[in-house]
Length: 397
Ligand code: NAD
Ligand code: MG
Image 1 (cartoon, protein in one colour):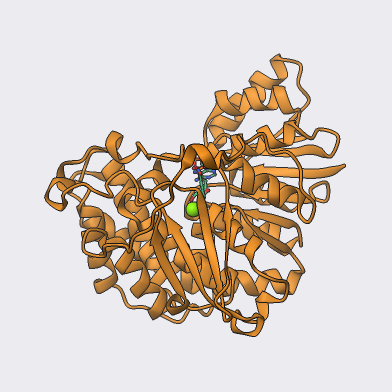
Image 2: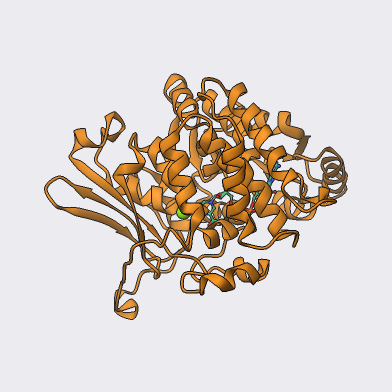
């Protein structure tokens, strides 16, 4: 039996992971489930999946969960805080760790799993954006196995030959075609973007996801973060990545080879497909996702991205090219701005404005250590918070 820990179990990816795991109970044992402060959600998951450990990042919420589980006769051990998250990510009982905490909060627990040499199913792209080179070095040093869950990166992984980690040119790859749906505002007139609401931004046309990544998809910062993620996962540069708008979200990305061949991975827009792929790899098994009906789809279309409409994508490309702590600064400013937008404190178009101003203000350093990266992350957050309307302390992380 393979032991699995799900970091961010109550979220969109966490729930999809448990759905796939429940289809294969003969293979997997749930070792630990974690969440931020969702007592009710984690309580229900604990009763259903009977993990050995449950962790809530918030200590008071963890106490409440422990009391409720004891009252229900459950023997789950409840832990709390970042220490608890690290403990269950690295513990001996765990073989696979689904890294599905949203945002920078995922970095430290995911790194704990890497350092313990686990198989990491990486959904938490922000961890790689913040500290990609250091993260990949830790993966190599500790013999961890890193499998991408982000649908595009999982698609690219499926289209690449073995040995790609030594450089894409060496395995005959010319470039990566990273697909994007274009989000809910692909055709919205630019002057209308200022007035869009959080509910409109979170209404993604093809995918059902957490609120932060939904807003990132609407600004296309998500695609920008994915460009940076791809550079680290596939040992390549932003110049070798072409973003392609593909509104149907059927092709999840493509790899173009030197001989002119282009390989693509297709499937319905259901995260259980990449999750099942990474769980079973190198085997295959049922994910529960609907099969693709290509006759019903009929047509696929493609267009180039509009960097004027989506300045966040341009900013991410610039940060990726600049390197050092620039991606960590971009990510931190974006997290603060997205949270402020979701809280109704700033208009949608201020997200890009704040990220750009923070990047202009902050000194970019070599990402020589995690301490340097986390210091620049912290500084960028504080800079971004200062740009919010006064009295909006509620938007702090
Ligand atoms: P979500 O908001 O639905 O869930 C986030 C999970 O993280 C929850 O369980 C929450 O309790 C936990 N969490 C939040 N803050 C935390 C903190 N400070 N400490 C500990 N736990 C915390 O998010 P999601 O949509 O499932 O996305 C998770 C990650 O996967 C993100 O990095 C996202 O970019 C990535 N991803 C998601 C999708 C998708 O379809 N949802 C696709 C690709 C990549
Ligand atoms: Mg994606």
